[in-house]
Image 1 (cartoon, each protein chain N blue to C red):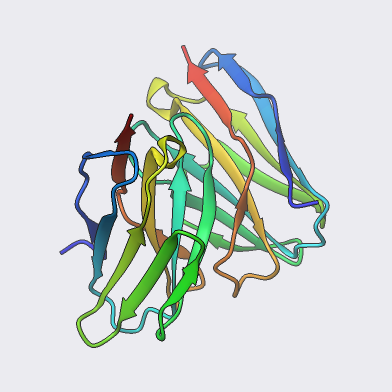
Image 2 (image 1 turned 180 degrees about the vertical axis):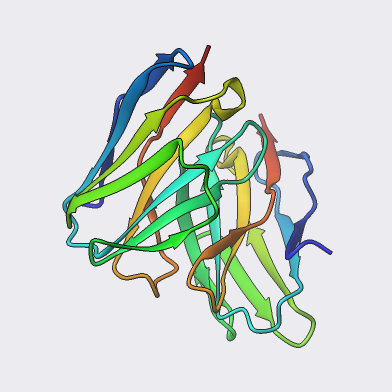
Length: 113
Length: 109
């Protein structure tokens, strides 16, 4: 099973809402990632979790809050977002943080109104 | 200078053609290299790793030239289903992937 799943597929939220994005993998991977991708741009790394601990935060605004409840799950909590935060949010996993082969989920397409 | 540079294309080729993409990188400490493909409005998918000795996977051949700091991808006998954006990706000493902006390929009948 080489699948990373993400929910929801689409999300529309107002600037005062709180919502969460969810990601799950059952490949036994120990590193998980959140990326943000705008149209016609490459993915931009946001956060890296390694063995359920946050190891990289790419200076992401605090309105994005990651959480790794266990080795299979990764959440991204959203609060007080701005319209410019509208993007495709991709989750990925890899065997370890030192592995370049990453498996991506289908993403959550987020629109902030 | 960008860390990874790719020609954005699009490369328009007929079915059956051979097409090649290059990618240059600036960080000589880059540890490993990959090609990912991304279909429109879909997630990136790993196409292949790139090894110094060059490697082949079916119709796809990847090459790495560390001295000149470029990698290449050759696609033979192009199929309509090869139409996608091809992302050149480096794995750096900072334990993260660095993506190029991608090269768009359009294969026509």
